[in-house]
Image 1 (cartoon, rainbow over the protein chains, first blue to last red):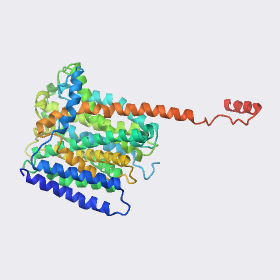
Image 2 (image 1 turned 90 degrees about the vertical axis):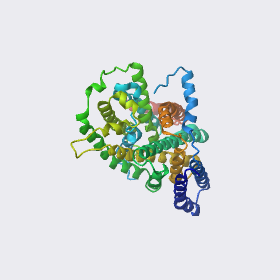
Image 3 (image 1 turned 135 degrees about the horizontal axis):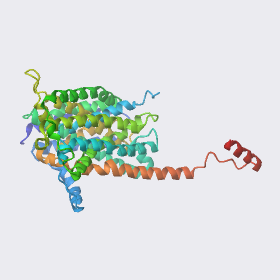
Image 4 (image 1 turned 30 degrees about the vertical axis):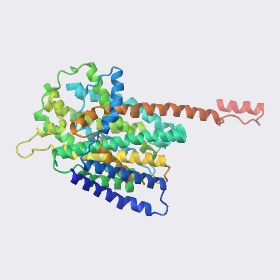
Length: 82
Length: 388
């Protein structure tokens, strides 16, 4: 793994959140299942991102979101100079 | 008198003002308007008032309710949840963007060898804890405490920089042309000022007697005027062409300032400003996202998901762009991205809310109508007293 420091620190951060937030939430007698499901999805997503960033796989999500907007704006004759 | 469980409007104003500083102070914005960037910001401030009126009109539809409650009331269960999901995505995206900007700035300027996530190890749990256990009350109290500190920093840096300023740097005034000036105005109206839309979800916790327009305008005008001061300082010290070449124009402009031998390298205050304001902005995004997701999932406790939302933003921040240059390009596109969330969707909500409210009013019987059991004579008497 190229970016070891990032991976282990990310795992530490996720582990801290799981230990201090997720486990107490699950242990509660009146826990709400949709909240637990959402939390599981977020922790899994964070772990995947930690792994990909640890492997130095970089993503460009912002431009993926913006590029259709930009092309639409340009097709209307817009001038995106800023 | 304000209800003790409600958050005073002045604190929300402070929160709105503080979050304006978060990324705008370090990024020399308004480059297309060149030496008129400060004027573009002044125009943007004036132009943002109708936008704030729009937000206030939405909040006045159902006084005492938050933005998301109003959406649910107006669009129904399914439509409302789709509307809220859009704002949840926007809050997560903007929160991730602010985290990434702050992270990049600190890593580039102060801690080049540390992994990006190292800074999040300290800041993310703090924000999550604050939202989870303190809620809006703590977030807004912090903002009210921190705002004067940031204002003092900005004011003192302007005063110390007076010696290094050249008025020729902002001349000729209006020299950038109408098109560039209007583009700059649009950009500034969208990026720092229009993001006040993220604070609308808080108004469910503000007393219904307080006026939303006054709260929002107070924050925007206070923060906006300080931004004008910051932008003017950058332009007067460095000049527009140099500002355009720097990614962090404020940091470099303040780096020029030194008073004698004992006040030097005060650019560190820019970093302090950024951290304080970013924490407020990230807190706002996390709180809005938390309220949104709890409405979507129908949770009883709205702050339950503060920690996962913080982690989601932190993780998403690493997927936004792969290097700083791609980042600056992405930041330039933010105004275009913000238009639906800042203007179109609130306008849609206002129009639909008004129609729904007027239909409801028509459907329910008018309270002033005389009961049918009244005789003609009694009705005439009642009409007489009504006219008197």
